[in-house]
Length: 127
Image (cartoon, rainbow, N blue to C red):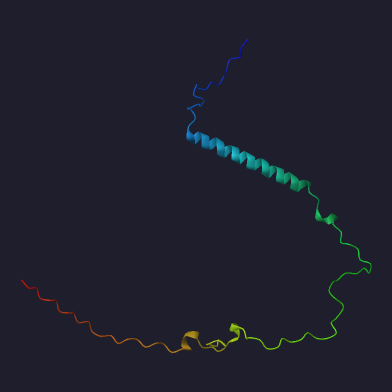
């Protein structure tokens, strides 16, 4: 007894009844299903994870909290000697401490004189 094939393909090996648009829909649908499955897996991992309340800090011999260094240096830190001043240490050209506006602190450049426009003569045509 031979089973009857439900889906037959043409002898060339590819069923041309599937359009490229349908192929894209199948591919994108499969990608969405894979992404949804990964999202469900990550969500399940999140639900099964331990909370941070089970973490306990290490116990110290002395007990008590706080941090920092109780030992103070015996001598103060030496000041840096000399060196090249930084470029941003130069004073600014304008001071912004007053109530005046910044645009009023510098003189405006003078405008050019407006000369009346005189049309130039056209060269005469020679026949």
